[in-house]
Length: 96
Image 1 (tube, rainbow, N blue to C red):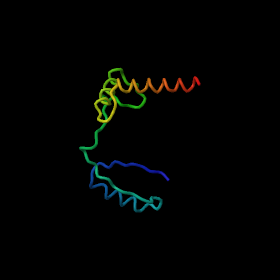
Image 2: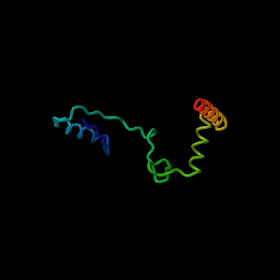
Image 3: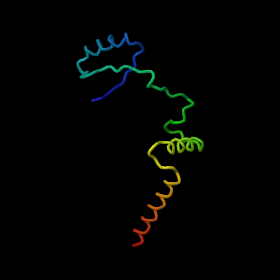
Image 4: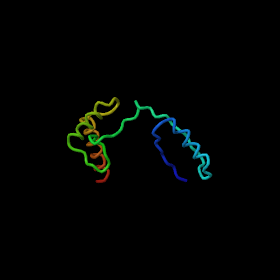
């Protein structure tokens, strides 16, 4: 079974498209979702999160800053201490 996503230019054309689907015996299910423009953000060429493109140092810093400001997370100093502690414990276990 395959799933496809179709974007239709106008809401008035959705019903016409569904009429076509009703005539196709191999179509088992179809549904429509309303597009809420406020929740959808189209990617532009300026977006820095793109598959296959390595992030720049500045972009990594922006991400790290955003993660530090995230409530419930760790700041970089705390995360470093925790990581070094885990590495130390792991080395002690391996040396036994």
